[in-house]
Amino acid sequence: MRSTTVLIALTSSLVPAVSAHGHVRGVTVNGKWTPGADPVWYYNPNGVAPNAGWKSLNQDNGFVEPSAMASADVNCHKSATPGQTYIDVNAGQEVKFYWNTWPDSHKGPIINYIAPCDGDCTTKSAQSLRWTKISQGAIVSGNTWVTDQMLTNNFTSTTTIPRNLKAGNYVIRHEIIALHGAQNVNGAQLYPQCLNLRVGGSGSVAPSGGVPGTSLYRNNEPGIIFNLYTGQTSYTFPGPAVWTGAN
Ligand SMILES: *[C@@H]1O[C@H](CO)[C@@H](O)[C@H](O)[C@H]1NC(C)=O
Image (tube, rainbow, N blue to C red; front, top):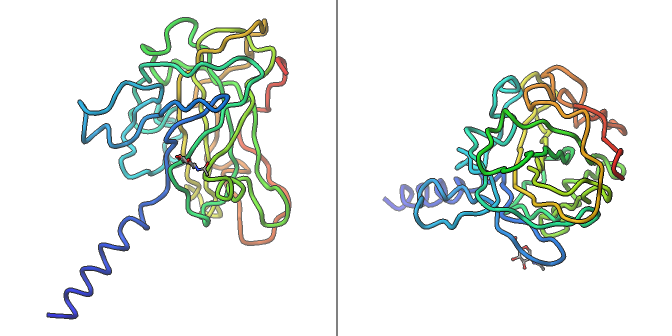
């Protein structure tokens, strides 16, 4: 009797740890907090206020597999639907993303893309978006990755909106690619998080070279295939080059 109770208690205490990957709780711009889509929206559809985050079926705080890179899920996570509000930010300002948690084993790059909505973002489909990469980071030094920095910075990661970016509505795709299993085909884990931005300011340069999410990566390219355990000191980023046309 006693040992059964102990076993149940132990098992249930392990469950959250096993599924604790992460999602973006919200962002700050100039210290102002705006919530993102919390996966609980699914269980509490009437209790969650409309917000700028794209909702998806990531109730497990889980990931998109490389085998799904040809599916619309690669854009903004599984079965994503648009955020209903916007985060106000001016070109040249920083957006700070707050993850709810992140396991330290899940090292990998953090990459940011933007897609112009050419009008209203709240009615867009994920697959209609055309992504332009604006920033990326990976190995900081030695065995320290940007994901490690994120952990020590209260699970936050920051990117700067290009200072000359044309004003308008955009979706930002903030992504971590966890590499702890990426030595195997289909072992990388993609954690894309999308939020609507209303970019202000006097910038004049529209993004160029945007591609649909399904064209961003190939499941066998360097950076999707990567061995974290062989002391590699450089990392080849997957996907397009960083666009600097509005920097
Ligand atoms: C850490 O982030 C949370 C939001 O995820 C925030 O509520 C808290 O104030 C932050 N702590 C510090 C020390 O900034």
